[in-house]
Image (tube, rainbow, N blue to C red; front, top):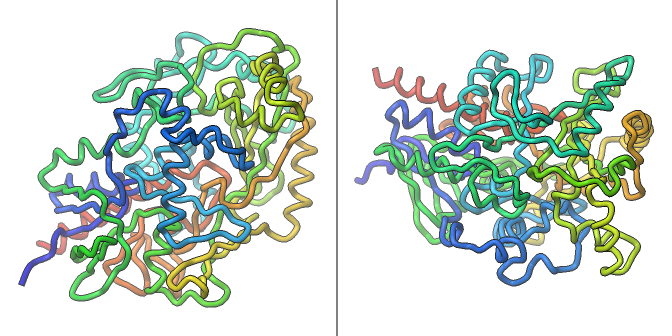
Length: 509
């Protein structure tokens, strides 16, 4: 009788998957990673192909979604997931990835850290999460934006765009008296100094088109290092489709292959993990609660920056912001401010009440003075559920929605922000919009750590109903603050993997 293929099988090569792999192989555990994609052709594309698409995808009609979701790179990742995952949306945009590196191929790369208040209801302590934050930060490379060429703390830095720097100076000169609104240079997972296998940011603004220098962190980069270990094996084009319990666990893939291990680690993303577990969980008519972050997009004009020359910079977040709107621990929003001049022009030209030629001329005239702010609410302001799709066999449908009274809170927030924009010398332009649920891609809470019942998991991400089945992606975060969530998902996956490595070592004694 053949033995198991590995001690651990990790499903998914995104940020959570690689973050779980490192502690396990460091402890000498045999790890098999099943990846739905591969790296074929990813390094050979010319800039024109990356920007326009091999089939001119960038020239398609604007679908109203975020500019970063309309690039050829994004379409090439999101569309296969939508076609093959069996997950549809009803008032919800289902985002997931089967590609090598998962959603790190198109993530915003902004870094946030949770604090003690943020995880008060979690069954873990902040010290363990902070240790894992440190491990992840060293591995992925992080830089913050500054408006000078040197930094007093000798930390890696990147130049702040001229319009963003102007706004930050206004804020520092006249901060709100109550301190409820904060504005600060953004911190991103992007290199300002080269490291092995990755160049520093070249400030060309290609961030949304698949960073050609490797400056922006992508979990594909970690796979090169993981594959050097004799304890790690990666299999391409192995899309997992089912899980079966026997003496351990067996994973079956779309091509008919099967692989076994005592423990399975799911890192397929919240929606991908839900699809894999749909036959193992008693999902009833109400469905599986899904937390996501309601998102506002706000266009802004800086009149004093009209006709000024831009500063070469990246197209990731320039500034971070936060605004408290209530007394509860989670009653705050966070967000980011981007310089529009570094983003794909076509998405903004298509939204102007002008012809294409006139729109481009207007954009080129005012582009350097335009900003766009994205504002994220905490997940408790969402009401989204994953339900079985009775018309599609094993398929799932995500129904999106907002918490009761959210429209009132959203309008109040817009008014408060208008006052802040005015204080900063900014004009809020027409076009502020609330994104369709799901476009934020900040998902959590379907299988929360510490919860009892069939949908709960332990502090190690192990399903209450199924021993040996661990989840390390956003599914197990008990709640969702408005902060950017990817860094926390990676840190939590790292924390769990350290615990599993220790548990296996102790059981072998």
